[in-house]
Length: 72
Image (cartoon, rainbow, N blue to C red):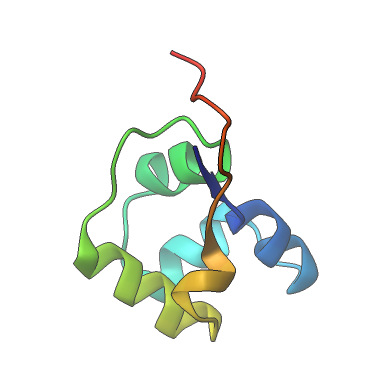
C-alpha cells in the first residue's frame, strides 16, 4: 500500500488546500483527493510540482507500507 503524507506536510507548513492549489496551479479536487488519500494514481508531473512547491522529496510525500492492502 502507498501512503500519501500530503496532509501531514501541509499541516506542518500550515497550508490549506487552497494555498497548495495557488502555489502549484493544480486543481483543488486533485489536491483534495491526494490529501484524503482517495486517489488511485498520480502523474509524475504532479509529483514534481508538489515536491517543488512544498520543498520536500518524493520519499517524504509517498511511503510504501509493506503487507498492507489498499482499501478498495
